[in-house]
Image (cartoon, rainbow, N blue to C red; front, top):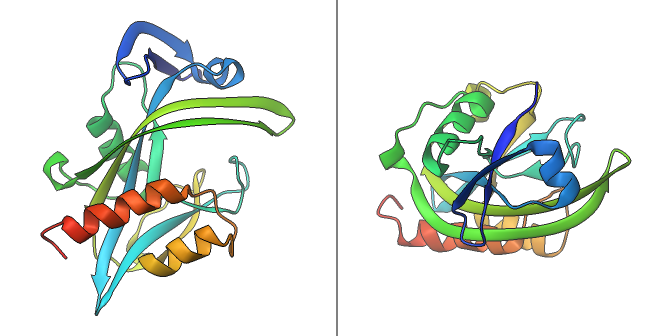
Length: 186
């Protein structure tokens, strides 16, 4: 079944046109995504939850954002973020629980599974405070191979030095750190 996305301008605003997801990535057409990073405080350490991608996804077996996804045509950033949390991790959250870290643009070109891939994303990044054990998440098997909590500073260092298989962008991880240090829940 085809998945359609809103075509957006450089500010992430829908243009009124839609595109099929595979065409967006083939032709490098701007579209939107929502990223949600789960964080918790464990004793004196701030931790972030990483999702391990399944073998059938791009970057198979790599660690990634806690929950993320493309925004279907007609949906907004918050609704998409909440839906992805439920689908990928089994978490029911409320819009007011999400802390907006800001927006990013992602421009990236590569080849996946023998096909050209031209990503042009306008992304809204959120943080959600959630203190759950790894075994208590309900993972979507088509998307998520596992989850793991990691010390936020260690994750930043490991991403900087590329010390584990990941597809995490350092600027986004730094946005998360800035947001959680300002958040009243720390």
